[in-house]
Length: 389
Ligand SMILES: [Zn+2]
Image (cartoon, rainbow, N blue to C red; front, side, top):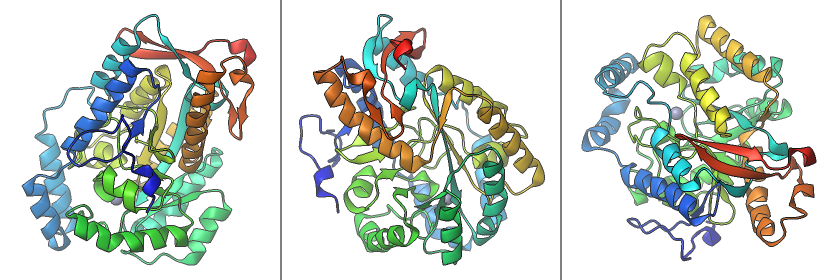
């Protein structure tokens, strides 16, 4: 348990029993307020309906193809705007809060880079485990590495797999407990599983966690799990059982040492399985949006669903496009979390001493001072003195 994360400071979120204190891209009060309200709303919404609770109780006896039929019929009945994958409401509020004149912030990424590029995977089944290598090889071909979130109590995980992934520069994370959709059913149930999850983190040499079905209860995750970061939140995603989103396309801190890394690219399952898309045009539109707004491009894909050659080819081509864009910082999620903690500490120094800030270097690159301003319904973040980069 990380008691230091439970703070009773002035910024404590006053919502239900939430005990956490969060800090975001900027501490400027108007901007902070927008982020905080979006987080409070997401936490309030991150509850399962009685239908979903019942579904997860019975899920073990429903065949996979019936589950997928249920998901498809649910998703096709959804009324969502054409650009459902863009966090327009939150970003517009931020643009208004920052105003056209803008405010100074520490640039989100090292060396004034325009976006961060982060690849993550959840591995749902033992078939998925057997497909890891195919995806991993595509990533290696482009010079990328990713994290593989494995389920500790569902399929056999060979020590040799963990060692191989680490040796090749990949990261391994923990994907819940047994993936039954009931992790947050009650505090008692969660606490009955938390020790095993923490032991698995040690076995996997994992510093990151993602809850199955991106169910989330940040209070419980932060207080009882021994990770440096969580990746169970997302900026916007109307298709999840716990729909909603935190609105942020950047990481944020919870307490003084825990980082949340929201995924920002629509999941492969949503695009290619539930909605039946056959190309990556939505990923490309979202990538362009994130790049314009200097956000984090965080993908969540599953070897289980990227299970045909045509899907792997799409993935290959998409990674190739990102590789050819030299404005980004490609990093493992564990490194983005580390960078964000360093950046957060630097924000305090930045307030005290602006002059020397641009000379300060972290293990990932230089800090830059940027202007953060609204431009229409979006935000623009630009290093102020790019000659000093
Ligand atoms: Zn999963």
